[in-house]
Image (cartoon, rainbow, N blue to C red; front, side, top):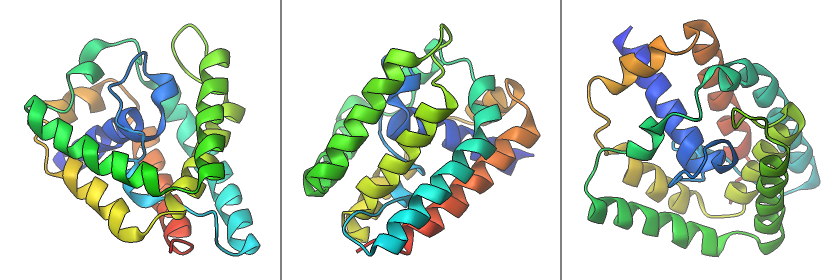
Amino acid sequence: MAKAARAVAVLILGLCLCSLPAFVPGPGRFARVAPAAVGAGALGMLGAAPAYADKIDDAAKVLSEKSYPFLQEIDWTSDVYAKLPTQNALDVLKAINTMLKMGASMDPAALKTGVLAHSQAIANMDSKGVATLADYTAINAAIGHMISSVPASQTMDVYNAFNKFNLGKDVGPYMMSKVNAADAKAAYQALMDFKDVVKASQR
């Protein structure tokens, strides 16, 4: 249970900081990216073979459909996300710097597509800060292409920078208590599967 709770905490943080800025009213998001603490540190493509591009888009659709129930259960209006990660400001700044470097290396077209996808999601999100499934899917596909357009080493630099942060022993259990555990686990597994597809096309 403890492992699952931590996975949920990391997944939510990844969504907030790396790939879903549109869903968090003002995330000092990290992210953006991805995962993706977790989120960002795992996806990608543009610049690879067209077949891979199709695979990333297809994988993004699967990820979005499997994780959307979990996304809808999260209270994106909570101020808890503004308090994560529980790290001093200078350490967070250094971690953000790894993201800036990765962003500067991304394919310009892929980056623009990602920015516009997030902007569209913000315009269409509901009163709870949740994007539509279509916009969420577009964001995930864009993130996959963005991250895939940079060297894997930069992706890991971002992941490692955020992975070492201390979320606190109570964060995981607290977040798990606010969502359906089965949906959270399904979303996490879907993210890992998506990561594998993107990684296969990363340069």
